[in-house]
Amino acid sequence: MQKLALTAGISLLCSLVISQPVKAANFTFSPTVTFEVIDGGFSGEFDGLGDEVFPNNFDTVVLGAQGESAEFAEFDLAEFSLPPLQVITSAIFQAEIYSIQTSGLGAAFGIPPRSLGVFGYVGNGEVNASALQAGTLLNTIDTSTVIGGEIITFDVTSFVQNLVSNGDRFVGLAIRAQDPGALTLGGANFPGITPQLIITTAPITSSVPESANVFSLLGFGVLGLGRVILKRSIRR
Image 1 (spheres, rainbow, N blue to C red):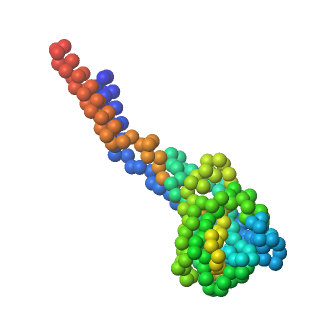
Image 2: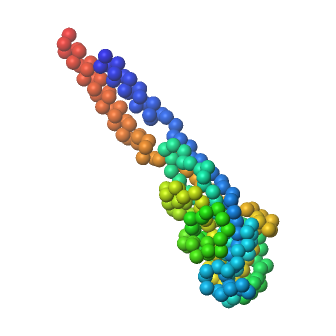
Image 3: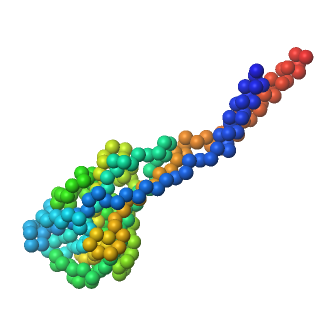
């Protein structure tokens, strides 16, 4: 019986060694709602509070002496759930620059901002000018040399991980100019890809026994089996 038990244990350990790991998975989300918020201009003071909102827009990103135009997208994660024994390893916010032939709010024509920033906030699936105040800067990218047609990506991994962990439903993301300038994004009112949120998950590596540990257990199993055989030989 002892020999059979040890043999079964060794077989189980061998199956752990040769078992195939769970594969990573990608999830791509289109926005539930997009909108543009203008601060300043002809409708209010340039004070960072947001004065006008335009539903279904996702185009002109402007920062000038007279105001700002920022673009917002909210993604509904209600249907998203982490696969068993997996974690979020990457979350990328993607958009496309359509053109730099843009101006307004005191920004010069044809001069893009040196950088764009992505701001994250907990959304609600609704269009609100107050979203301009809600965002926290997550990271920036260099846009000083863009000419139009570039795909831009922002790493928002930590932010999305926290929202999913907290059970928040809507991921709110905004693209804002970090320096004076103007450009137009594609995918809403202009040709190009629509903004997307791409979430990648992968297995929790710590849940899979390391090869060294597995082989150590195999060694103990073989040693135990040898002791049983030795004892039986002495008894004879």
